[in-house]
Length: 231
Image (cartoon, rainbow, N blue to C red; front, side, top):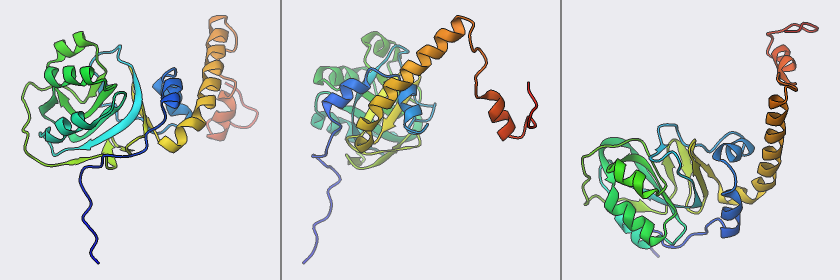
């Protein structure tokens, strides 16, 4: 009995829960990256079009061939409100995969954000729109619309593996991806780290413990300082 071929478009997948998304949205991408083991952040080439951008939601993954946005149009027709489109565009900068028309449509559809490992265009309009979009840069050239790709398969974006339904959080620093299965376990750790960092900053502002307590021990472990030697 032959096995039917797998489709390039997957319509159903398990998303990180709305409750976890809502809680995770309270934290900076840097906090989540730290408690996730300092991993999951997209390469710094992917930056926010607007520095004030913030977003959180489940990944809706798209793989395209460089310079073609056919599958992004298909994904927009399929995505649910709250989803974040995450596009593996092979880091191509020779043309824009999305611009003002498509991003206005994303906003109207309730899509929570867009991550492009590729270029965008219409920068001034997008900044005025205030919609969260992250990309590798801008290019006024438009894309083609006839090359097939895949939707809701695992992709690589910004050097990080992204699966459909993973938690995506973005802010002015960039974008972090947290595996769907792992996201809930990081929330308490993130809250604890925020408390610790606020306490540390308050101490510094007050002139207390300006030098990290761990510094000299780490320098000894690294062989920079000898045992008993101090800075």
